[in-house]
Image 1 (cartoon, rainbow, N blue to C red):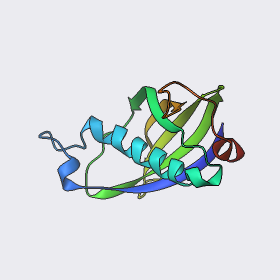
Image 2: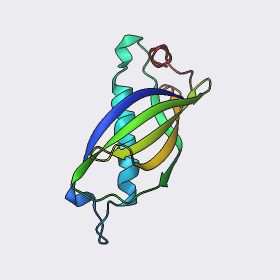
Image 3: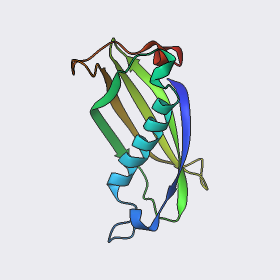
Image 4: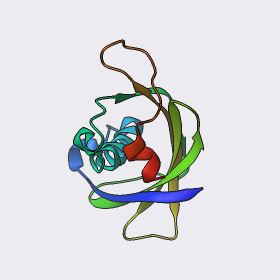
Amino acid sequence: MKEIYTSTIPLRWGDMDQIGHVNNTVYFRCFEQARVEWIDLFPAKQDNNPAYVVIVHTECSFLKELKAPGSVEIKVFAGEMGRSSLVQHYEMRRTDAPDVLVATGSAKMVWVDPATGRSTPIPDRFKAGL
């Protein structure tokens, strides 16, 4: 797999649940934030293709407990690519313990034509970055 992006995301006190650790939904939000930042690197004006991304499957393996404060680094990797889909894989580590893998995950993205609401080939601007 090819690493295509890295994001650093702060953990907030409000991310923790009543047990005192970062709630599992926050892991998905961190993956989402990294994914959106990557998508934003390729604005539609680059190839005049207004296709947008929807997520059709996502998953996370929770390997270590997280507590705030602190921040995590999300590494994004390009996985399997189809005509209209791309699977991204994610690795999450605390920035103060970069050798410790906290979570792994993935998301299958499908590009959609806004005029039809149906899948459409991955726009050239993304293919060039892969």
